[in-house]
Image (cartoon, rainbow, N blue to C red; front, side):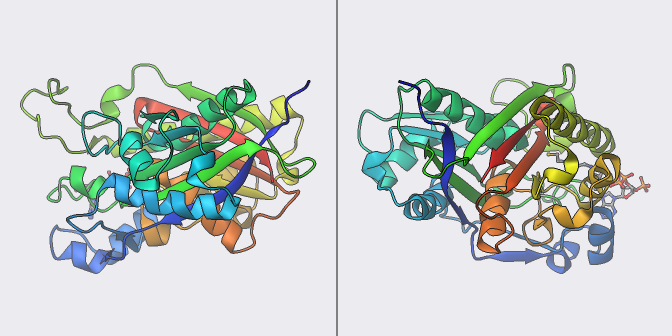
Length: 325
Ligand code: COA
């Protein structure tokens, strides 16, 4: 018997209450609201409370996605959590979320690190695992507590990032046509040093072992534009779809100027792109699922429409997914 296509059945998102504005940042480092807005588009970001963990953020987003998909935690047999800010080195934060949500013993639960492309990597892996017929419902979460890995004295990075979580439920499609149609994942070889957090036993620069984000912003910017443009074209060509046929593009929310450039290169109107980075900054693996959820809530993604998601991140990883809603 042919297996049903796999679709996104529900979405959810959560951001901590605490808003950190550009003006507040300008009191900590030498920067200004105008500089941050003109170079990035970011106006504010959310920051987790001291006691709030990545698992807490993930759990809130996941609860909403489960309710939206009208399934219970008992129905979930696969949980993949994309993050670069796990609560522990082991076990995986996914195991903590399993417990918090009451997902039954026996479910497969693991973390995945593909940095800001993490959600799209996790979506691809979950799609493949469900398509094998061995799992029924997957919870795919992107959750980050980046405020804990920022150097708050480095104005070239601390203004860019924020905390949050987004989640989707995947399962057998419930509507004719609604399905994940395609996904492509890539990594640019030899670019690991451009954007990294030193580990417990290794740092590219032994004189700088602090476990905070280090980035060569200009190089990342150029590669990001090229990568997202390339993967968007690859997916459209592979699926025989023209840019005009895409109803909504959900790009990784890193920088308004990166999104402007992609729109220009792909010759697509900017209003086709969903953008919320002004309110959240870059939330890494959480960025796309938060944006997807908000796009749905605002009616920007409707049944039957074609949605293209594209992301890039440390690695440098990049990827895209094409979904018929
Ligand atoms: N406030 C004020 N000035 C700042 C600043 C800040 N927050 N951050 C950097 N500057 C300064 C620099 O020190 C530099 O000063 P100098 O000319 O005296 O040396 C000047 O602004 C220009 O810096 P530059 O790095 O050329 O700026 P930029 O236009 O490239 O913008 C980024 C910097 C980080 C915003 C941009 O490179 C970027 O967005 N890169 C991609 C980052 C990204 O998306 N990373 C996440 C990947 S998932």
